[in-house]
Length: 190
Length: 242
Image (cartoon, rainbow over all chains, first blue to last red; front, side, top):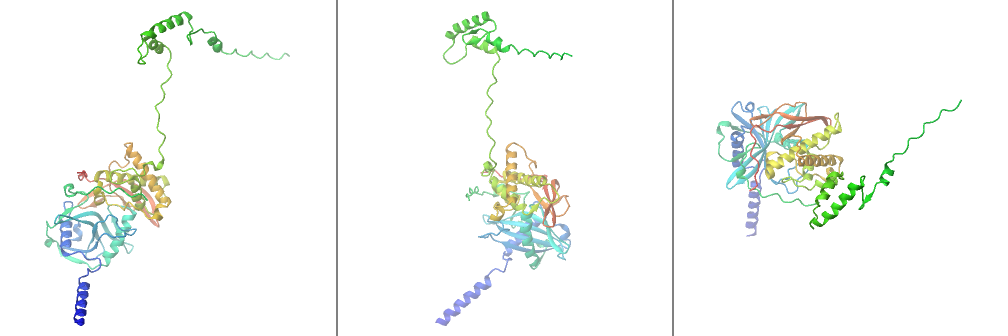
C-alpha cells in the first residue's frame, strides 16, 4: 500500500514537471496565433516590413512575461502581461521588434502593439532603434532582445496566418469603447 | 587782482512758503480763499442731502474730479510659488513628480557632452511636455499608446542631480502648460537616437518626421540625440472618462 502511494506521488510529481512551461516561451498556441493575426492584420499594419517576408515566410522568436511581483529596475511596473516578439530576416542579421500588451475583453483576447523597434547589427553588436522612448526603454528592450536572439526561431507561412482571431490595437489605432479602466489609484506618499 | 565774485546762490523755491500762506478752510488748502469758502459751504449743505449708504455727495464728486486723485492701490500680486508647490499637482492620471520620474528614467546617465547644460535641460523640458500631452490625451491608456519608462525611480536615482534636473524640467513644463505654453505643440512621441540619423521613422505602415531635435549629448562613450516626433496624420481618438 505504501509503495503504491509512493508510486502515485512520483507519478504526480513527474506529471507536474512535464507540464511546467518551458523557460520564457510559455505562451500557448492560441496566443501566438492571435499575435500573428494582429501583426499582419491590425489596422496600422502589416507590422513586419516586406523585406523580412519576401519569401512568404515569417521567422520569429518570442518572449512572454507575466507581471512581476517585485519588478527590477528595467522591468515594466504596469502589471500588464507582455509578449515581446522579434521577426528576423533569414540570416537573422536584421529584424523587427514588437512589444505587445495582453488583455482580455470578455472571452476574446485583446492584443495591443505598444511599441516597435528596428533590429540591426552595428560593429558586430546587436542593437535596436526604438520608436518610442529614451534610455530606459532602450535598455529594457535590449535585455529582452538578447533573450530573443538566444531563442530558437519559429517559421510560419504568411498565407496560413488566420485573421479575426483576436482584437488588435496599436498606438495610432485604438477603440476607446473597448476600455473601461477604473481611474488610477491616488499615489501613496513616501 | 580781485577774485571773481561767485554767483549768488539761487533762492530756494518758494513752494513751501506758498503752501504755508495758503488759507486753510475746513482742513483743506485753497489757493483762492473765496472759491474755497464757497465750496466748503456747498459741501456742508450737501452733506445733509447725501444718503447714509456711503455714496459721495455731488460736491465731493466734483471736488474729486477737479483735484488729482491718488492712484488706486495696486492689486495684490501673489508671491512667487515655491518650486515644489506643483509636485503633487495632478495632470490627468500623472502627477508632476511622476512626470519627473519618467524623464529621469528616460535620460538616465545622459550628460550634456558637447552641448550646453541649458540645451540638455531644454531637451528634458520638451520630453516632459510630450509626457504631459500624452497624459492629457490618453489618460489611463497612455502607457499602451505612448509607452514610457515607469513613473517610479530607484532611490539612487532619486537622490541624484540627474533627478533634480528632471524634476526642474517637469515643474517648468507643467507651469508653462498652465500658462498656455506648450514647447512641443501637442506632440506626444519622442525617442533617443544613438547615431546622427534624424530622419523619419515608421510605426506600422506610417512614417513620421522629426519635429524637434536636441543634442548631441553623451551617454557613456555614445553620442545620443533626443527627437520629438510629429503626431500621426490621423490622430487616434482621445480617452474620454465614462
